[in-house]
Length: 125
Image (cartoon, one colour):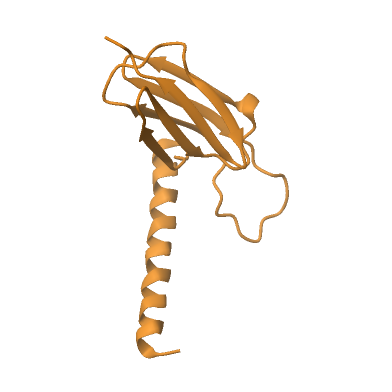
């Protein structure tokens, strides 16, 4: 392994450490964790993809309002003695603003492979 490769590896490790610390700080300040998400705009609807591994469908709640969809839920911790614990648990809430009105009551959600997919129709004003 070259010195340049080691420098890149070291830099990557440092960035990952900073990310873990920032996430821990965010959790301690907010009392929750923040799942990663993507919003994809399609012709007549939006597709929201949220990483929620370990979250059960019955532990999720969606609320549509105006241009915003709010997602809340909980990931329950696994009981045991941890040698390493990086995966957050507990309650979370996150709001997504689509930038335009959405049709209330049209959200369709499915949870597969730890990814929540929500399709919500655009409002036809």
